Length: 342
Image (cartoon, helix red, strand yellow):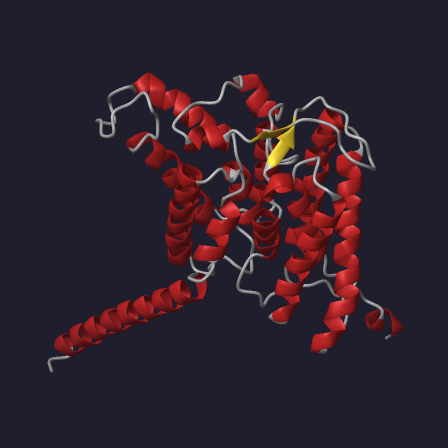
């Protein structure tokens, strides 16, 4: 019996959070290659902050600290990956604290209505825009401490918002050699992580595919380009639309959001029909933020807005299935009664 008492009991979503943490390693390695060891230290600060917050806050709602529940560390890792490599350490600490607070305020893992990493990033983007929304040039080795005397640049989404096109080459886009968050640019690595999470059963295609369809289809149908007329047929100006789609897909946090944020098991709906609607709404709101703001990680705001709907969508879906079942059962009873001669 002592072995049973000492047996480690993981949380229900332990595998998801652990796998996402493992996926952050290659993205962090790419950031190390482009910026030096500072991203590693940023990640360590974020993970340590999440651990300390969990130890201090979880006893307040009676459940106590669970050493085998790594969701807070996972959210901290996602926050760091969406930050610029030049971000001050205190901003990472503040964002992670807010993420853990929103998680624990609603009862801890499995109970929060909004994605904690999205909450932390939203607070940081609104509070420290200059430090969070401007990025150093890749290839610039950043010092670990002190003031960073390096030029910072706006992300590529600012060009897209203004109706222009960035000038980054395709090879730089897929490898992450562009100004942007330290973990959202290496598209090839993100795609590999998405395939890994899909094979592990963590990526729900019923959420991801509708999300990507909307994010890609809307810019094609309604391209925000100064060189094009306000309204044109989808078959016109194909070359310009293809160039626009390249930057829509390969820049910003759209793919990162699809792989690491949209399918969080607590905040996404539980039923397939609900997830399809959720993905469509998430894609629509993300596109609105990409068209109208310079936020590279506007998907975080989209997650907070659409996060109010999953529970309602599940209820509507359950009710629709119940009505469908009752109609089917009524038809079966009527058919049986007719066969029996009543």
